[in-house]
Length: 260
Ligand SMILES: Nc1ncnc2c1ncn2[C@@H]1O[C@H](COP(=O)(O)OP(=O)(O)O)[C@@H](O)[C@H]1O
Ligand SMILES: [Mg+2]
Image (cartoon, rainbow, N blue to C red; front, top):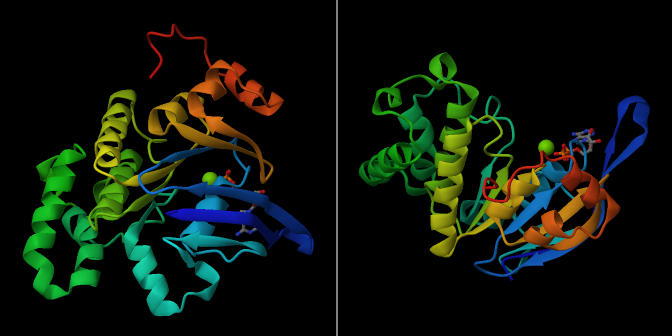
């Protein structure tokens, strides 16, 4: 198992001190090489789930085990190593990137942190390849992230940063929400290529079509609870839970040929 989530419950203090239960007893597992879509509307707990898996938020109850290690038992060196094997593309590409760096520096940074200055040549070569693969023009390499990038370009820089260390597991939090349709398709193709090469993806989205393209299996969250688990194609074609049915009937009725 690459990821095992067991009874995961997270409570935050909301406004006025009342407890907000962002996740409530969520359990699922992912085998090596397998991918998973996490589906739910805004506020259903998707981001909190990824933040727990990447050890940025500690569970109130339950456990997360990554590559066979219980996160609650990992020391700080262990956590660094686990995070290196597990890339995270955060939901907010504005908060996620160091604004004073250039695009090339921002993509190289994780590589230099792990490999030191001696890794500079290889890091730069990898960064340039990824930036081109993600359709960011060469003229952007020396642009400052803060000054000159759109939200969609920032999302692609954040994805390149997460891919540069060749993660075994990639956690993507709505990574194509700011892309136009053609770039969205290209990004999904890039992820699919990596998946065929053995990388696992956890793909967070509120969109059932994207969920189906990103992974064969999926879970549906509603108000922090897992309400449905199965094949993402079934969520569209024969949803079992009324909530999944609602999500699916809210989608525009496209011809099956046009569906992603
Ligand atoms: N740091 C936080 N403090 C307080 N409440 C939070 C925090 N993070 C998330 N929440 C609450 O937890 C719930 C789930 O949020 P989130 O995981 O961001 O959902 P999603 O990503 O599906 O939109 C929401 O009600 C949200 O307001
Ligand atoms: Mg979110």
